[in-house]
Amino acid sequence: MDIENEKKQDLLLAFHSTLLMSRTKEELITNIHEQFRRFFPFSHCSLLLCSDNRTTLRPYVIDPVSKLRDHPLFNWISHHDFAVDDGINNVVLATTEPVVIRISDYADKSDAPTHIPIIRESGLNEVLAISLPAESGAIGMLCFFSENENTFNPHVYPILQSAAPIIAKSTVSFLR
Image (cartoon, rainbow, N blue to C red; front, side, top):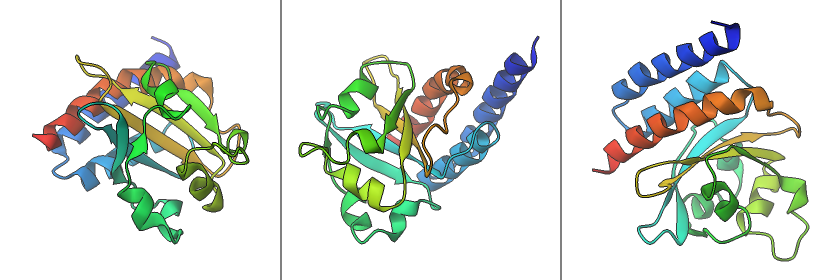
C-alpha cells in the first residue's frame, strides 16, 4: 500500500470513529476540521444543507474559527437560505467531484450570489466544496475556505470523495 492510500485509510478510519463520537453538530464540524487539517491547509469549514425541495441551501453549522464570524452580516449569512441554482451551488451539488471556487471569479459580477461579497470582505479568496451524497441525491455540501488562492491540491480530492458519504450519514443522524 502506498503512502497516499495509507493516509486515506487512516483518515477514513479516524472519521468513522471520531464522527460516531460527535454528540452535537458543533462537535461534528470541529471533528471534521481537525481530521482534514491533517491533510491540507484551510481557514475553516462549514456544512450547508438543502431544503426538502432542494431549491435552497442553508448553513447548518459553521466552524467556530470561521473568519466569517467577524463580518457584520455574519448573523444574516448564517441563517439565510441561498438559492441552489445560483451558478455555483448547483455546480457543486451536481457532481461528486470536489469543486474549487475562486471568489475573484465571481466577486465583481453584478449577478454574483449574495454571499460572495461577504466571503471576500472576510478575507477569504478560495473555497473547496463537495456535495454530500445520499440515496435520494445530495443533501448538502461541505465547504473549506482559504485566505489564499491555489491552496487546494487535487491530491486530496480522493480523500474528500471517500469521506463525503461518511459525513453525509453523520449529518443526517443529527437531523432525525
